[in-house]
Image (tube, rainbow, N blue to C red):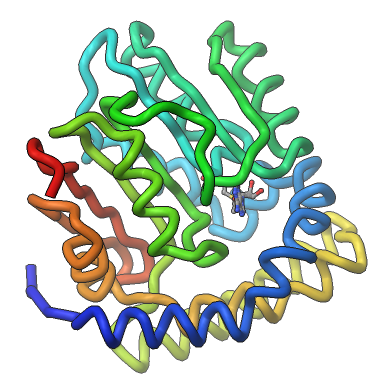
Length: 259
Ligand SMILES: C[S@@+](CC[C@H](N)C(=O)[O-])C[C@H]1O[C@@H](n2cnc3c(N)ncnc32)[C@H](O)[C@@H]1O
């Protein structure tokens, strides 16, 4: 694994640009998009990923370590893909989920119920988590960080993690190879247009298609993301990636003594 340093000034500058470009969309538009997307989110992911969705999830689960009885929080949980995958693997977990979209979580609760799993779901914003300090053994976050103010969210995740607790992250990242990036972004533009046609997306969701690729263009590569985790206080950071850096898995540990 290559190890790069991204100084805090560079991260702050990037976060400032992301906020300036996308802050209004994050606050005003995204909830309406996910309210519409909820009804077809799971199916659309299979189509948009050319059937690779379950493989992505299996590969992510392979890097997540859990023990019976642990308390887990999945943030930006959407339709509970992560909570359900964790419970299938370890039914003795106490799983909690939070998402700002009531519509996505409603589908998530239904998905869990259908399989006989109980997940404690709350509607809320990940920037201000409604949980006590030092509460969770594990926090997971998949496919949402591009829509978030990273510094605030990581501070909240660290606050609710117990000392020594693990944060696992999976997301589409910005490939560091320019050729891979160009092919990938071209594919994404096509697949977003295709799925919004097939699933008859709302006008709000159609208007945000361009945002989904723009947000990725300003996001972090796998190496940069490791540097961000270290800079914001996680230790023992590990990373792995799939498909030439298109998808990245990261783990950070909350230090035993604050830090
Ligand atoms: C692409 S979906 C990912 C859902 C799920 N993690 C998965 O892997 O399928 C992004 C989710 O992030 C949620 N989200 C976006 N901004 C949020 C915020 N500020 N607080 C909580 N959830 C948020 C959206 O409502 C949506 O359900």
